[in-house]
Amino acid sequence: MALQKFAVEHPEYDFFYNWEMDIRLIGNYFEFLTKTNAWARNEPFDPTMRRSQKYFIPEVHNWTNPAPEDEEADLIQYNPIFDQIGSKWNFEHDVVGYPNGTDTPRRAVIISASRLSRRLLLKMNHVNAVLRQAVAPEAFPSTVALHYGMKAIFVPHPVFIDKAWPPRSHPRFV
Image (cartoon, rainbow, N blue to C red; front, side):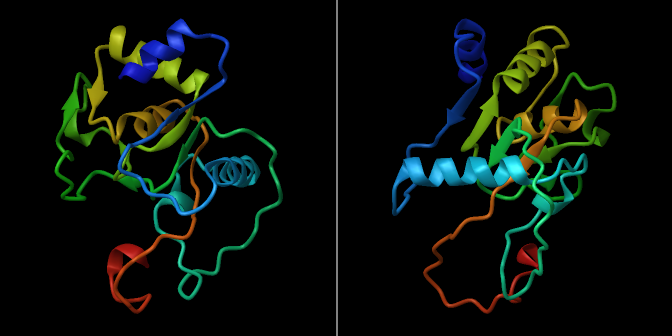
């Protein structure tokens, strides 16, 4: 990933944003990123990323607010982080160099917009360059975070949907 190379060459930065040019945000980017960073900082570390697996829908989920942790996240994702195995995702079988092949535990996100820590990007670079391992770009940061015990968080935020779907109408969201 180009961002890995940039992180290696620019030690003056602690965090890096990978943003997709087709993302539309109605609002202020500074405010959005500042608030999502603060929210992720206060989320507890969950090595399984279970709390980050689904969209947060207030009518469906009753998330409790954990005690503030005040630990920076190595990875902040803006869509749910899901288990690839058995997901039928197009890139589910895109696994290179891992001894267990497609049985390797992995996580992924459908879009690669994220905030990544220097620590995570350097570990990703090591996994690529030295270990010769890789998965699809949408899966690589969260998979490396999973394998190396790094804090990875999906930050729920308002998402516009142009249809009036009842909250419980799709199993992926509940």
